[in-house]
Image (cartoon, rainbow, N blue to C red):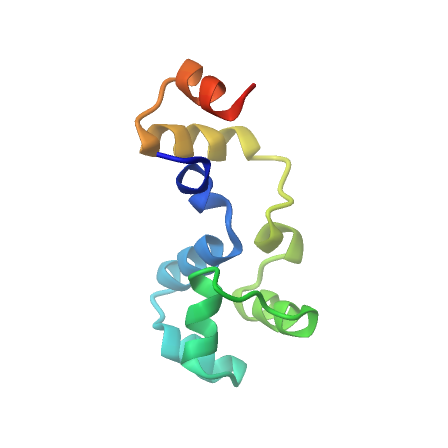
Length: 102
């Protein structure tokens, strides 16, 4: 398991998917509301493409979240996110430290 798989919960795409599924929406519903093709929105969720600043603003308004949250600048719960990621990967604290070079 590489660093990429350990970090998947920290991507814009993962946050978008989480927000969408928590709201009980399909990709098509979100894309239609944003006025973009569903393929474009799908690429955002899969981290194949990143929204331009104006689209980022529209997405944040749609989901009622800050751009800081969507971009991962949330200093209040970094420890919780690392713990969750470590748990999902089945790693001990020492294993995570060894793999991340800390």
